[in-house]
Image 1: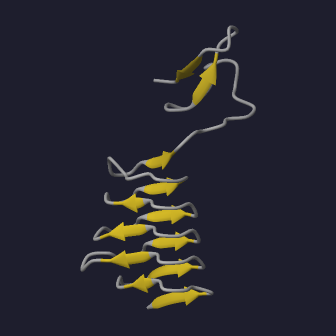
Image 2: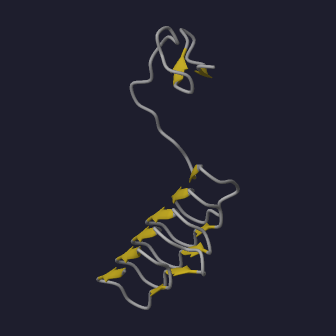
Length: 115
């Protein structure tokens, strides 16, 4: 199943993959299933499964289960979200009681990851 909505010059050649809006976006490859491009232009999801791009321009997802939010980004590893910059509001100010992998800050504003 393939879905194209309000799309111009887009190509979807992956099973159960979707492009929602945008221009000149491509989801291609024999193993490219369950991927999505949500708008933007000149974005590519190349021969991987479970990839996604949320808007932006000239992005490429080349690793499985990876996602891009931003512009001019090519993925560098699987199971990772790639961004140009990241803003985190309301970050906890202590690691006490947090699950592993949660980002928090100390009293000086430095960021840590609970490990």
